[in-house]
Amino acid sequence: MQALDTVGWTGDGDDTDFFLAIERTFDLRLRSNLPWTRFGEVRDHVVSHVAAHGGGGTTCATQMTFYRLRRALGLGRRVGPDEPLAPLIGDKLRQAFTDLEADTDLKMPSTRAGWPGIAGGLCFAIAVAILAFTTWAPPLRIFAAGATAYAGLWLRPFDRRRLPHGCETLGDLARLVTEQNRGRLARDGARLTGPDIWRIIQQLAAEESGVDPDLIGPETTFFRAKARAA
Image (cartoon, rainbow, N blue to C red; front, side, top):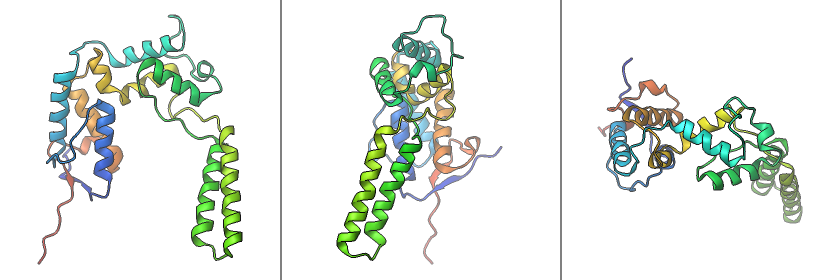
């Protein structure tokens, strides 16, 4: 399979989102003026960062995460990766994930809004639309927007959130947490090889570009070439 010449970013924030994801995943800080144009340059920088700051460990990162989560949840050794997650977390999902972050020192994946949260977000969107697009008299417009926004605030406490997509078991959570904390786990002794790093970079770039990650090679560039003026 031949790699793409470019993923065709336009510089409207798509590259910024990618680099923020790199920083978050590998727990590093990137300068804003790095003269990179190819994904291979990102790979080389991350590999050198992990070599300099990682622990050179040999432990499986997902296994390390699983043990931390199990210990933070107060579970015994008999609980395995296939254990359903919802009964272990309980109803207060937002607070449970906050506590897990504090206890494991690992960033948790984002939870999903439940129906009250979705309805509340829709109320805020409607309130903005009322202020921006209606031609009602100012008192009526302000009252309608305020009442709609208040309804959104009223609904928020009832949103208990939902587990992330693909997060049905404790093992699923360990996998998702591992993917978001590769750099931190490497410093703690987890194994992170060059091929592992490249696979993660490909996946992060693919999520931002909407292309097959296997089509992103070291020589693939970020931006499409600008047409020369005649």
